[in-house]
Length: 508
Image (cartoon, rainbow, N blue to C red):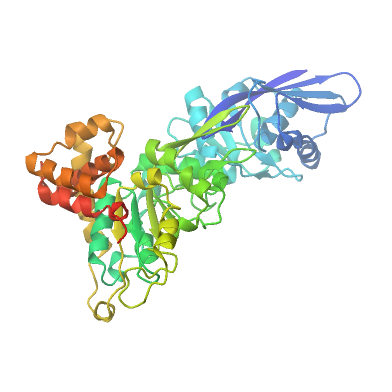
């Protein structure tokens, strides 16, 4: 007896339909799975066998062969358990339905027959919608999968309940969720810019970074508020759109980082990995490729505190995602691409001891030590960071002031106004912010007059700016002009953008 049901394999963040073919034939009892399965798929034999027996359905004492087609795609994870079990039930004619080909089954089985949650349910739902099929998933994944329009999603808690429903003895209704209602109110209470005393020029730099989607690096002594500012940076970014939330949710779902009680990422991600992280942990990868921190920060913020303490090979792998907004992980058998559109916020000390230029503490580092410390951040990496900002020690009168600073809501309004200007400018284009402009867009939208050109020429000669750094100055100037509501870039905009290239200045 041959039975066929559908399941799905998630590769990267995309789902690929898989036919699960179950054949029962005469011969010595055996159970084999073919079709390029990994160890987790091979182990499903024992889970499926125990789940069927403990759910009250016998396991056939025959030769059982399961083929996962197409056979040239690597099958990973535990999500095929449910499809294999349904295929066996269908092959034994416990369930006789002609419309099972219209369903996609994904789920992990426990030995007692209960169905556990799996990774990537949102991507599988998108694949099922494209294939025009209905979807059966674990109950814990049902709300996540139901976010996709155009697909009927059924949540199941046990194999026995599913078989009873498929046999027509019970009925099940598709799961419905209101994505818009779930998405509403995504911005909750959190750290606010008003908590930060002083540092008005740093707040201005972060406002420019948020308005244009620019990467930013803060340089200052310990205790000057770099981490405090970085943790409040996400609060001045525009709220996520529903499409952005779904994109971020797909990545978190595939990585297994989606909370069970929150099937949709509604606030912009903020990721702050420790400096001991490996390149695979940051960029993604591993024997079974998984998204890294740069992808988990998609549409949000990646904060690297004490950047020079990260290993150099770890920092250098940031170049591609910072430039392209995605990361490709190539292996011998396959290559997967994950989205990685994030704003990098970095923090570092000005020198190894941290007190270079501090009026209250004496720096004991030699110029050579300072140069070696800063050299841990390579020139090509620094060129990709648009804004370098000094963060000096906060003075006592600012710390003791009772008046709260400007709140995140007020700053966010200006940021959103500048983003709307950019949305009109790039309508129909790939990029949505000034920070992601290509060379052609920069040339078209960042034209300057003779006064600005002379100012730029002076800065290039004095600071030795590279071609990429020169382009970054123009992009930042365009964002500053957008915040000011100016159609053209003016000398004050260029001058402010130039001052955000602190690390291009020679050491004194």
